[in-house]
Length: 85
Image (cartoon, rainbow, N blue to C red):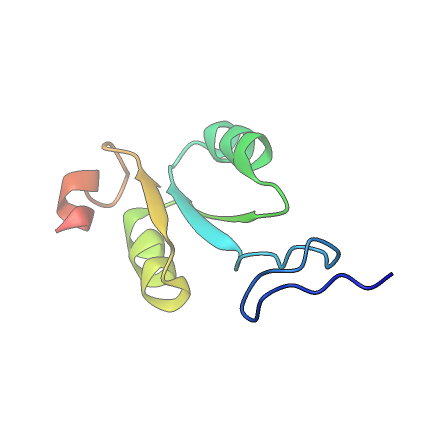
């Protein structure tokens, strides 16, 4: 028995297509914070990248174009607010 669906109707028999992987950038000078957030938030649909300084974070943001950024306010080379601007 064949299942006839109207054109444009998604087939329930086909596996769902995965949406593109989202990217999160974490900028923090404390390695244990970066590690904990990366391991706690990363999964099959979220790629987590990290940076230890504001300058490194700015460069990674330019190259990776993350969907979201977690930015520490106190960083060794500039404040998080300066990096945000």
